[in-house]
Amino acid sequence: MLRILFFGRLGDIAGCESRDLPYDGAIATVAVLRDRLGAGNEALARALAEPQVMVAVNQQLVDWDCSLQQGDEIAFLPPVTGG
Amino acid sequence: MARIQIQTADFDIQAEHDRLRAAGGVGAVVLFTGLVRDFNRDQAAGAPPVDTLSLQHYPGMTERLLAEIVTEAKARWGIRDVTVIHRVGDLAPGDQIVLVGVSAAHRQEAFAAAEFLMDYLKTRATFWKRVGAAGRQQWVDMHDVDRAAASRWDGDE
Image (cartoon, rainbow over all chains, first blue to last red; front, top):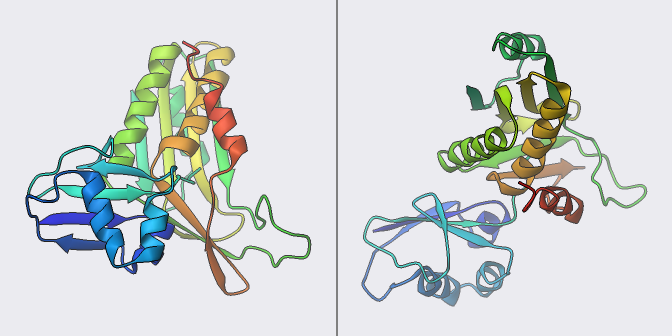
């Protein structure tokens, strides 16, 4: 299983703040996961492709070619606005 | 030493000041407090005032990122103690939202480190604000002025 988290406006667009997705070997990288999540949701596909969106795997910021493993937590992060 | 806290509860500035000055060898304490505004930076004239603000964060990752920012501040300046408190959850205009405090031997380090901590917190720590005005909720965008403020410190060892 992969645990997927959507923060900020991405949660509204995804329709949830978190979801689980069965892991399969075809989801080799974060970029593949992003494409799969966007396949059924055009607005989400556009939002996740925005250059300012960052991604974390197991709470570490990573590049889009980061590989994934069973049990990973993947978080999609829009630009932060704390303070 | 450092105190990093993410909480829904309000904080007591006097208590935080007392803790920072107790570090030893302290000649200066700088405390910054951010408050919830009732207006947006880019809002049109006549737009309804902001009446609610809710703060979301990424538990675990936020604490770790703040610890990294504090470590970086300590590497740059000779500071005695640091406090970072950020509130999450539902807040209202005028509420205290963030506190950054630094104690140091001299004021220059304390001022610089406090400003650095706020600039990096605003652009790196995983918090997201949503404001409500006249019943309409809206996620806040990051502002270029905040990016520019943080980039001042890049490569400035």
